[in-house]
Length: 117
Image (cartoon, rainbow, N blue to C red; front, side):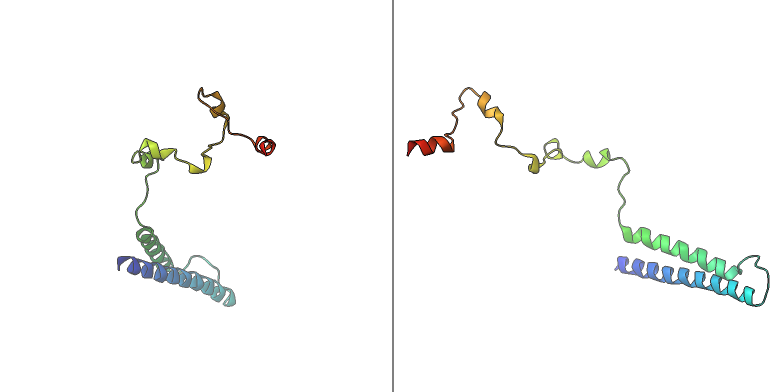
């Protein structure tokens, strides 16, 4: 339930931020039409932009969930040594190490099997 409230806050914050940007653009257009010089934005537009920016940041931080620690070793400290380098895609079962074993009996090749028939 909390996550949905935070998502609504993010949505309302983005809409409010978009509205403040649109109001700023509309204010600049009004100043051009009336031939007035632009000095600053009105205080209500600035406050709306700042408050909606903080609302979006607060909502996003709560929607994102738990943050991880920056050092990569902090996550690896919880895993066992046997599982850290377990990469099944690199398993090789057919290699030259069998030929170096004392009790190695080579399997007959296809040509040897063809000659027996």
